[in-house]
Image 1 (cartoon, one colour):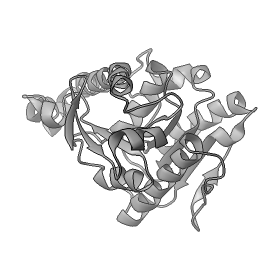
Image 2: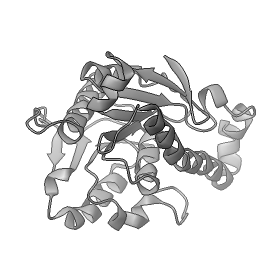
Image 3: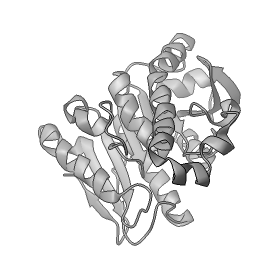
Length: 258
């Protein structure tokens, strides 16, 4: 169902009545750069199959609110001619998206579509970066699962999440990276995990890092499916009752708790 939440175009995915699914848990889902709210419909469907309410949101400047000059602003020519300015435009969309998360959550709570202790956030690529940034903006986020998105921004902006590691605990974070990622270096995600590890020492199971070996930013359809299953399991663990199935590792995948 297509909806508007606090001015943000979104798609609601649920296998149950909205209010019933929200009691199980509500998960905000953010797509990648250049995409739209339908870009992660398979993940949203998997979350719904697990009983959650998935709210897939258009990132600012994307989808139904796509910039009118998008093709010019983010053209290959513009990236080549003025990479710094183009990166700044990218980060402006990212920070604006994270900044509106508290207002979105306020409206979801008012509608009975989100509840205390039952709110998660996930996203792929740019959406993963939104997930990191949103944790710093919205204390009601109970768990996060950013996928191939970096907590370290490409420009030295003071809001870059990697500069604020102490503000993340105790939010459970499942981060994914790709070993050969040409767009989002795995070492940036891995280094942030290492920075968080001592801060999560009292509850290390709240911190999990997965690196997919031998693949780049786009992964493969099979690995995306695996990643989505891990995301669902993460929210089952941290938004659901105790005793849900634990996260498991597939052969060849490096999984780290610290």
